[in-house]
Length: 473
Ligand code: NAD
Image (cartoon, rainbow, N blue to C red; front, side, top):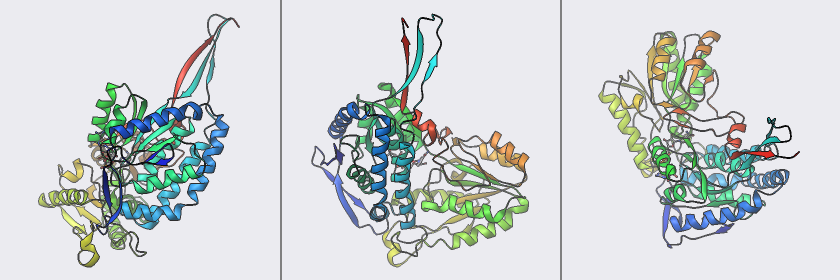
């Protein structure tokens, strides 16, 4: 763990092993922290808040830029660590480590751009101001699918706004996160501004800790509900980035080559373990056969393999349980009459038998009510359905408890406009690859959570407004 810039053991002395999903080998052994460690980290963060929040914002920006530059110089060291603990390909790990540093720099640029307001009051010998202040110590709880980018989404706006952080990575992916925070510290991030605690028990302890004033969680919807209920005890601010089941609608007039590329990246990137991913595909009749041909051609090039091997195009799934869950969802669809168009099983033999590998999978004729439509599919399996028109596509797309992302491919501006107006989601991509941009607020609706990460909006969510009346002026 990292508390006050020092590598720290758990108070209990307990440790656990981190294993490589491609080989089953032990990558490292790390402290299994608990409530006592969260307490120590929260106190360190509260101490650091005193000086960090009082720094001139331009100075804070300068420190963060320097730290981010130093971290970005270590991307090649950090990427293999991420691949070994998470499973993703080296290319995906490099992109992710790069995004971590870029995100810190993006929010550093905002540090000295916090704005308040002047407000006229009825008594002209007084005037009102609204200022924005940092909140205090914030908690960041992160899942295993994108350990670095999802940590940066919370840490970067929080510290740029003058807060300090207790960060908890997922138990199975602590190593690259530790390396990134250590690199920021080596690059000049002051002691105690970001502290890292490890171990499954630390999540609840962060939510409970009285010094921690805001919780940002990325995780599954059931975890979000638990965290929300628990955070209510301490009346804490919360941001919840939860599960998703993003629909994608392709109409007859779409650019099918571009659509196939985006759907393939959208579903199979990171071995399908992404919150923003094309998880349900609705294709108009006239485009159906051509699009399926293109999608299958792309899926067939995604060779599963150890993420460290140069010719691997898709790493293993992160855990055995996660793979079993996706296989059960696919089996449920097949049992109900779905047809597998591509993949559908595990690659077998040799090194494949050591890890949690799975084939990219595409299914058609998946009946209503199948788990692939009603649940989040957190792996590389895509259910596809033929639709008559946009009306049917929009109805099916919105028939989900989730509302994270969504996309539409069409040459018709009126059709795109309707989709933008009617899709129930926090993001809609029109003829564009599903990428979450730093510049745009990102977050879900419905059971996908609330609050925003990315954008100026995320920065402001790490501040509180305070009203001031100046009398006798
Ligand atoms: P998870 O909910 O099991 O765990 C997420 C984090 O929360 C982990 O660090 C975990 O230890 C911690 N946690 C678990 N229970 C907790 C509790 N009661 N109190 C406090 N902390 C607790 O999720 P996961 O399996 O690691 O990740 C996959 C899920 O995350 C998927 O549902 C995916 O859609 C979602 N996700 C959402 C986004 C988004 O931005 N909306 C992004 C990525 C992943």
